[in-house]
Image (cartoon, rainbow, N blue to C red; front, side, top):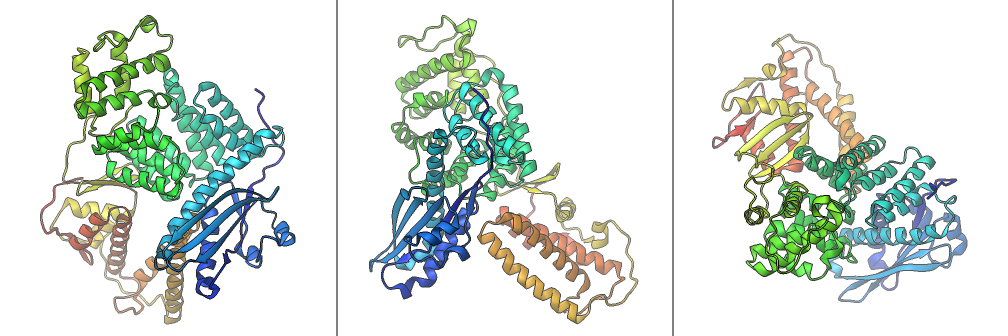
Amino acid sequence: MNTPTATKNKEITVAVLPFQLYNNPDEFSPLHLGFTEDLINNFSMFMGLSVISQYSTQHIKDISNEAEIHKLGADYLVTGSFLNLGIDIRIGLQLIRTEDKKVVFSNQYRVKPESLLNAEDTITQQIVSILQEKIDYDLLTFSYKKQTVQLAAYENWLIGMDYLKKCSLEDDQIAREYFEAALKINSKYARAHTGISLSYFNEWSCQLWERWDESHKGAMENARKALELDENDYQALMILGRCYLYTKDFEMAEHCLRKSLKMNPNDSQNLLHVAFWFSFLGYADEAEQYFLRAKKLNPFYNDTYYTYGIQIYFELGNYEKCIEYAKKIDINNYWVDLPAYMAAIYFHLSDMEKVKECWQLYLKRFKAYILKNDADTENAQITKNMDWRTDSFSQKAFEWHVSVNPYRDKTNLKPFWEFISNKLNIHTQPETVKPKEQTEAAFVQVGEMWEMTFQQKTVMLKDAKGFHDLLALLKSPEREIHCMELMGVQASDSQGVEVIDLYAKSNYVKRIKDLQHEIAEAEDMNNYEVLGSLQEEYEQLVDHLTKNLGIDGKPRETGSSIEKARSAVTWRIRSAIKKIESQHPALAKHFSLSVKTGTFCCYQPETPINWQL
């Protein structure tokens, strides 16, 4: 196949028109305008889509206004309506392709009037998820009909992703050619590197086993290239997290997966993948939450959702739910060792006939897709009359199944593995991940990250100065440590002059209040690029005021090294606890109640805690 090329890089443009009000418009005016704005904000989160500003669309009252719509230059229009039915409100929605005015998607939503505001976020996120999928599918259909020289970067990426889903080495290679073509059009197109990474580490196929090292290296390198171009590429973060999982660097795996989720919590496919890998990290309860949210955001989900659900509910110990999902799919059409999981499920349910049946199916799939032309298994036969094979073929199948499931700690597979290993007369258990030693709590620096465990929950946070202060206090509980010791400098009581006048103070306070409002808006819109710079400015201003104002709010004299240290350490510790609160509220509450700041700082827990430091 010749590598596809393109002449230009055109984004797909979407315009959201004001929703029509069919009755009682006065009741809905503020609400429906906000609803339209939310749709626009949610659409803007998707890479590859360009969204027309509300200022350009708000004056268009009807879809029949073709002249004004033409000026927008949009590829797709989103139109909708509100209808008050008394008991319910019906929200109608259509996605229209402007090229031929074809309706490519339409749907209706019914909600209670009193719950409309609460339901708005869920509705808009679901609509955006569905429309993104419909737009991609519609564009993909048209792109396949084009000559390759007409394809733009986004279309090359889209076709490449479609080839990845065909689950063969040949299709992976074709997909990679499309991603490389996208990079020729736009060398800084991070998503193309993400696609190449997926082509190396294709989740739909286990056929890369014979060149595992090469595939893993290609996946990790391209995921990193994508993040160098766009540090917020949530798909690349998800892939990198998966790569770390297979190298058993579980801390970095969790960090990448959580950051991926933070970058885009509304992409149903990404939620599904993160949920799946969280089940390997030991967070089955959390995995279920993300899995259910993915289903909610994508009500037209396909059968692959059931396979992910089987994995998650297996680790939750809900084996009946696993059987329910398995009945909805053909397990022959998914990953190679899915029948092995089914055997483990029936093992827990004490149905040994089903265990044998599923294990034999797994052996057939292992021979067909993994070993292929292996000389040791070329003549191996698997029959219904055979109980448990004890040759090298069955041992390889068992050991492969163990090795390709990178669990961090315990797994519900363990009893089943022990059962199978005994049946196969394997005297040395295949190497598995040793569970971590159980500790009551941990506060450990790991490179540029900190691993914090408290009340059986572990999180990873990026390094901050306040974490070092907390570590020093944890090492010496009940001991009062001078702020100068935490700063690592000698005390001095020299006095100075005021460094901030009342007018400057007023301006600082006003800007801080403005920043608080802007930060809240950025968080609501998931605008993480803007959020980072706003938070940095906010912390700098707060730091400056903290250092230069006294407790009563009056300007503080400079020159007192003790006062400067007290102020700096207090701010650092409080800021650190605030960062912890976003990921681990229980630990943040513990520190807030147990850590005293001031000239002397101290860690005084109500009851002693055994910290791993």
